[in-house]
Amino acid sequence: MRGMTTESRPAHILSGLLIISALVTVVYWVDYFVGGHVRTLDAPWYATFEDAFPVADGWMAATCFLAGLGLWRGRHWGALMGLLAGSALLYLAALDITFDVNNSLYALVPSSAQMQFELLINVWTLALGSWTVLDSWQRASIRS
Image (cartoon, rainbow, N blue to C red; front, side, top):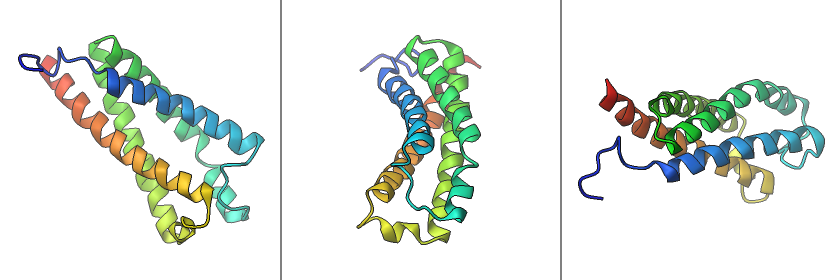
């Protein structure tokens, strides 16, 4: 839209995706611990790694939810929360991708629905994290 600055442009799409990401994260961990359908492997080394994620993913989900809410409402703190959320998304993506590469888990993508979902999560967190940081940086910089 011509004439709209980054600050005045609604961030509804980004906001919605951040809130959806927060909610899907909660659903993922409920399934992981209750149903186990999202688990790629039953190996103890895999469970040890995955069991270390809920607190970090909880932080990411909380910052995503708050950033989404703040950006939707056009609040300055939404951009600041967006920087936290985006960096959490990127950090967790890097950690997860490194683990998957180091353990040759991407080789399972053709035959494993769980690993296909894992790949989707990896792409999603990289893309959404990058978009969130760039957009939030612009919005936060305008106010400085």
